Image 1 (cartoon, rainbow, N blue to C red):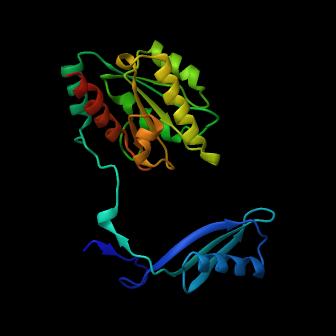
Image 2 (cartoon, rainbow, N blue to C red):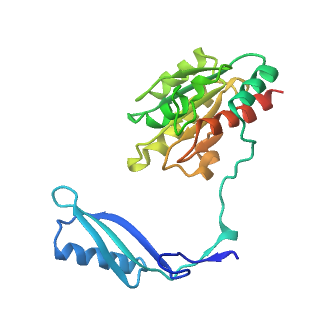
Image 3 (cartoon, helix red, strand yellow):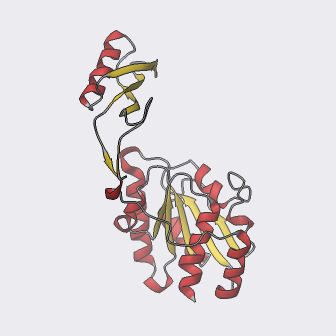
Length: 244
């Protein structure tokens, strides 16, 4: 079965829930505007289930209603994991046996992005969701530069550390800042280092499309929910296996 319909109350009823903000003060007119928008988006009937002021002149809404759209799962395109998921012990063993030196990783949040939660979750010893970060891998040398790092500074730090991989986290996305910053990152490394000496470039963040790695000039994009173990396993696949 490849054709599916959204499910809300009963199988195949097409019910979906949608949230958004309108630049209108909370009142009956604002509620009517929210329902009008939901109707224009194909929700019929649409029900307003929640509204709340979001500062002066803005209102947040949640609407619930039926849509007629179907999804063909055969037409869905995603980036499948093309490498085995390894344990920390297996990662360390692979690096020691095949690379024969410690793997160097440099990470940062670039541009004006001050949100280090993502990069810290992957790199810091404490990690996330019960998984320790890359700092816990004895065969890795990890340098976390933190937040608001300029691209030129990141290039120089990666060069000095002889980085095998550079990890960049981008959470701030206003006006597609995460895309612009990542393109700038890729261009800077291409200009600064020849192909044979260029580190693996990895971008991550909740708003990235994992299909855009080639377009942005990076080797891999990791999205929401990525764990340190996934990143470590990819590094073995891309750096260590590639060096064999």
